[in-house]
Image 1: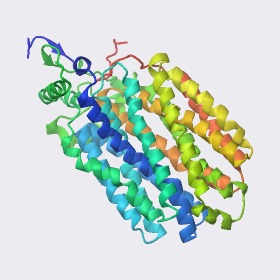
Image 2 (image 1 turned 180 degrees about the vertical axis):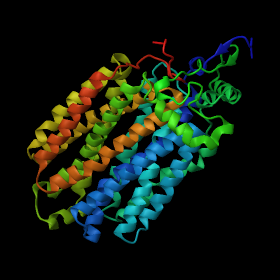
Image 3 (image 1 turned 30 degrees about the vertical axis):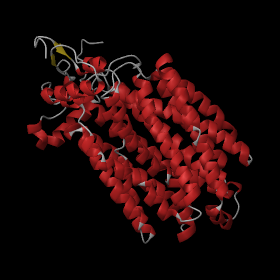
Image 4 (image 1 turned 90 degrees about the vertical axis):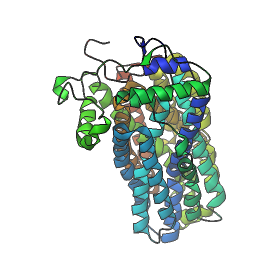
Length: 486
């Protein structure tokens, strides 16, 4: 092992190990989890339109089918984030996957509208924890090109959205929404089957004081990659110091040891207070606003794609709305708009490590605003699809970069909790946007809907400008910085 007087941190160990076979396999597994989440999210507009046709529900009830998913996600993101920080990343995404599989199967067999609402809410509770996959993967990656690799993980989300649009195009007109829901949860089954091959995050284990376990895992990673660890033994970053005003005790750890798992409520409170320490307070509040506004904008554009691409965009009768369920043009236009995420992913991966996170986000935000603006007035089908394609490309890229930034700015000790709470805040935006995208457009108020989405994009751009830290090229922290650190 080398001289035990020498020591190396998890960041130094991962830098020595590099990105190799182990990280590639980890990326594929986490990506499979994100494909599963994307399938469940992109199914929302299709199920709403189909149930509206089959059961004759009102536009408000159709919107509620999407809103309840976000209500479930609101609580799920918060709950699974703290589970992941208290009991481990693996246990976090295992619970997420089981919840998604069970709720999806129940949704497919729902006999009526009320039970479908319940099952979709439970599904949202599971899907809300999808962020744990990204936190887990990120903690195996070192500084160089970390942004590009996390965006590579986002590529799996994009594959999931495209796959769902393709499934809808093929399945919906022929077999209906129940078969679409059933097939959409297949990737979650693969996540469960392969779970036994995963390993816990060494960063997480180090923050829990389980350095021997963390070092063993790092040794296995090095062997898999054909590299070597630095000389010495693994040590965690310097002891954490939390602002006295915002913490119950300076000696209270953010994460409990194995013997302290019964103090989970105290752990949750300590983690929450750490997010509002003097070093993170401003960042936390800005990230909450960013998640809210960008989730509102992104899912708003997703829902607008199905609403404006179908015949109801011309404010025709309800009969025409119902006929659009079996109209292949609707699913074709949705598939085309969904493909916008591919060039967006390539663009953001190209610039994010070159010009930094904040400037990249601002650029994407500006172009998203410009391309959405012409839709304040009704356009023909081709122009509408093209504008939705372009605006979705940039709004999606902004969303990805915010997700990347939030995972880099929080230390390992509160990363899952911090991102989980921010994701929960974002889900509130997701809960509201169906009422705008479906309600206002169906009510022939397209201009009002678009202006509201534009206002949210302006809010996103303003918050990005005031973010205090640039995370590009900097290592991930495992603990909060002490007061004398930069």
